[in-house]
Length: 361
Image (cartoon, rainbow, N blue to C red; front, side, top):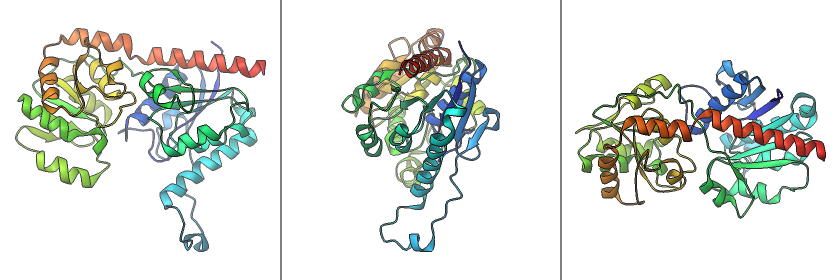
């Protein structure tokens, strides 16, 4: 297809670099690299410290310092909020001035509301990917932004996520993809694994309880984003066959998952996609998960077993059931369903269709 000049807007809070802060940063890294490999000119706007191999241009997140007068305002927003606001505002104003000379399409892959709210100021068509269920700021921006300003599209990372946004905006579904060559087949092992952001909504404490009920040792890995939660719910559960390995670099994490017997995915919220489930299955490691959000779309009977939300014993039973699945079949399911090639094919189709609408307009 024609080589495109793509502006890819990412997170201003966490760098798109290893070790990844979360699934959004990992997905952005995979998408940017895959688009570049196909010959597209990708300019990634991301937080400082992002992988220089992606050609990232750092968002202006550190330089904004409010004046003493602004600091004294009793209604002043937190500094982190203002830094993100400043970063996206400066980017969107710059794109409004010069974007039409530099880019064919803007892909908003962030969670911030300003790229959506200021899309009408651009003369470049924009695709926005919805990575989460509705959030108040983003929902407000979507509902108030005119839809007739020019060609634009919304994409959801799963059918479940699209359905949750249906009251605000229609969105086509493009499932996230992973590098199934990097997340390669592994021999398995004796221990179960849980990996991801250590936060209440990911509920690793539920995974620990289920693993104990199933009688399976468990290794946890991932960045601790909520230290209070870790102290209350995770630290007291460690030991006796449960180990926290820390925040691992990608290759260390891949090796851990390849040599795990089963991956426990235990969200306590409507999981919008479930990248860890796809990564696990690509390694041949079956998933024992909670049937919430998009996980039933990603984890079929070929890739794992699911339990009802809130049913810890059911999750323990899912662990034992998943252990019976043939690893080669689990891997095959992931390659057919969750590859980065399929994801990039769909985004190229989306970009091409949007540019056709722009030319017609």
